[in-house]
Amino acid sequence: MKHKKTIALALIGSVLMFLFCCGCTDKPGITGKTDGSDADNGVSVEGLPDDEILVSFISKNGSWGYAGSHTYILADGSVYSSSEQQHEAYFPGEVLTDEERIKLLKEYSEPLTKIDKDTVSKLYGYMLKIDPDAEFKYEDIEVCDAGTDLTYVHVNGKSFSISESGERTGKLDDRYAKKASDLLRKIMSGGFKTKPASIYSRNESYIETVQCPNKVSTSKAKRIITNLDELIEFGKDTGIDLKSKKEFEAFYDPDYGKFDYTVIAVEIVSYPEYLDLKSVTADAFAVSGKYVGFAYLNKPVIDVSDEPVPEKYYVHIAQIPKDVTGAYDSFL
Image (cartoon, rainbow, N blue to C red; front, side):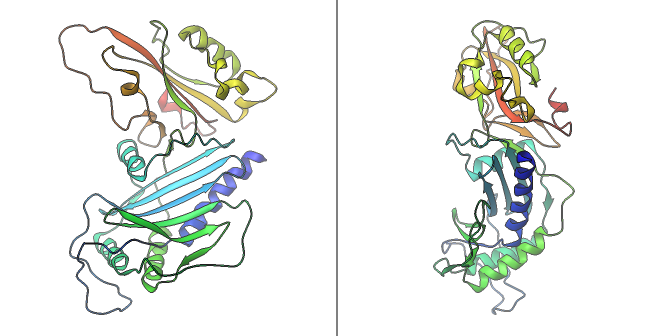
């Protein structure tokens, strides 16, 4: 029941997030060409910023486990999204920036949809006219353990929230913020054929890259460890004792039942010895229709050489939710 409740909260949070979306920013230096009126047909903009996030929808709930999602509308109209959940909350403090998450989503997933240029231009026209100093008004009612859904608008690298829902509900009291919100609601209400990806970084899970104490066999380079016997076998094969890490203690306790809802993805990799551990460390475990596996913000750069180079062996390790749909099959 606990796991089902977390999933339900994630879905509810996503719905609320899109129903209350809207956004704004500081007054930008970009000049927008308007149609000369404040009519509801909006304003047209001659140019859009290149390769920038225009709107982000952020939803998080850590009341029962962890459920979160990040959805972005980019200046070219692309919409990218990631959704993550864990049975137990895990917040080690290393948070991907919006730009870093988008970089991973672009590399390892496909966009949910592509918004036409005229609609994006209309949206950005509203954003340019929002007063960021307007009052943010909250409703009197608060809901416990409902998480938080926030909508941000970004212009010229600056951003702030113009709507919030979940435990508290409120919005920026500005007519153009409302127009942007209404337009965003239409954009996001149509549904998408592509599912959001999952980007399990250090903020959503345990992920680490460890150097192997000696040369190891790569005959089983990739594994999804689903029980204690497989975990013990992995330790014997690699010489890595995960039991010594507090984040893995529960996996070794059969009474705890950690494997009932969480599994461990591992991948043995080798790199030239001149690369240090930081250079080969994975930043996330990505799950999408395009790719399933460990992901890098900056892939290791290997020099081209005809001469053999001594190698070091490493293991990528990530705790991810137990798969019930076969989503990890392509990783293996």
